[in-house]
Image (tube, rainbow, N blue to C red; front, top):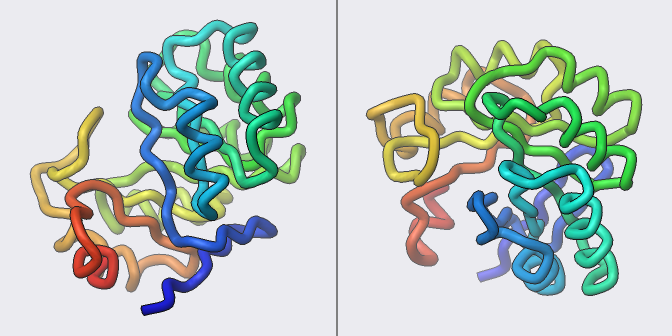
Length: 184
């Protein structure tokens, strides 16, 4: 079975797969580059990094791949704005953000011509961030790791989000095999 490409604004990933932004030195440049080299979107987890460390990780990823590289950063961290702006200044391809909503990040993304992709756990929030300027949404349910906003399954939430928004939807958590990919 041929998987469709994932299109987010001007970005086209050969495979509709975005590697999770697992924080605290798990999702670093090497993992992100490996995913990007296979045609997915590789993600560097910026949470917990200093701006200097993030710059090093982005530059290392760029040496290892010509594929799509993004960052994931939690809104709840103290240096959120600094980390996002640092990544944008470095020419990151995509910014994923969770654990809260930062209205300013959509303007920063527009100014840098970089897609901003928030993590959501409801159709209501997905609709709200689409109006703010989100280029796509990552929908997390109870199966996902990390900072969750729901006790509902991603399989319940995704159909509701499909009705609520016209931007790409990325299901996150609980995707185990090929059937799960098709269902998502």
